[in-house]
Every structure is written in structure tokens, then in C-alpha cells.
Length: 158
Image 1: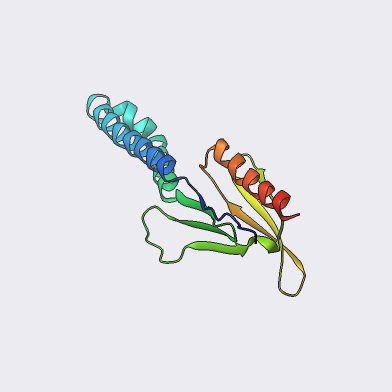
Image 2: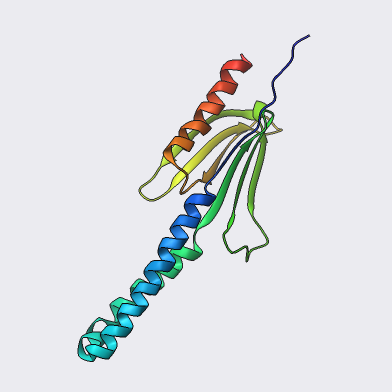
């Protein structure tokens, strides 16, 4: 009789996203305050840099609305990936659940601005598929935990 140990690994970027959100909001408030001071004290300078100021504010707001929480969960049988907005305006969330035995390979692809978890798996009709799941703002140590967790499963499977 063999006893299999069940474990649950859960990795999330909630703390990092909250920190980034606080920084962006602080920058926006400070920027609005300094823009107001410049507009009252130096109106001619404000007229010249007005477009740049608005562009920076729009950029910060866009960055805030593009922030997403990401959760990786491995129950020992199924890998679950979730991504949802910090404001929960969208009722839909990106969610992927795959049994571990169907996954052939998993690795992290790092682009210039984004990180993707690439999962190669076998479908019901035995064809191979590839999923690209954005895992931005997850720490590098957590990247390694995700990959090592899958490697440990592969070594114990065989």
C-alpha cells in the first residue's frame, strides 16, 4: 500500500500588484499637485508642457487599469491558473485548469515587458496544444518555484 502525499502550492502576485498600485496612485497625486502649482506660478511654462503632463497622466491611468492579479495553484493533480482585474469590473476572469498528467512541458518565456508561462499539453484527441498565460509581476523566485514544482512532478511520475 503506497501513500501519496498531497500538497497544495499557491503562488500569487497580489502583494506586488498592491505595491505597484500604491506607487502609481502616489505618482499621480504628486504629479497633479506639481502640475497645479506650476500652472499657478508659471502659467507660460504650463502652457508649453501641458500636452506632456496629460500624456503622463493618461499613461499612469492606463498602467493602473492594465494591472492584473495572477494566481498559480498546484493541488498535486491539477494545475490552476487565474488572472483577473484588480477592480473586478469584468465578471469574466481568465482561468485555466489542466490535469498534470496531460502536461508535457512547461516553461517561462520572458519578453521585453511581459513574462509568459508556456504550457504544452495533450488534448482529448491526442493532439498537442500550447497555452501562453501572462504571469506579469510575479517574482523571479516564484518563477523558479513554478518550474521546479513541475520538474519535481515529472521526476516522481517516472
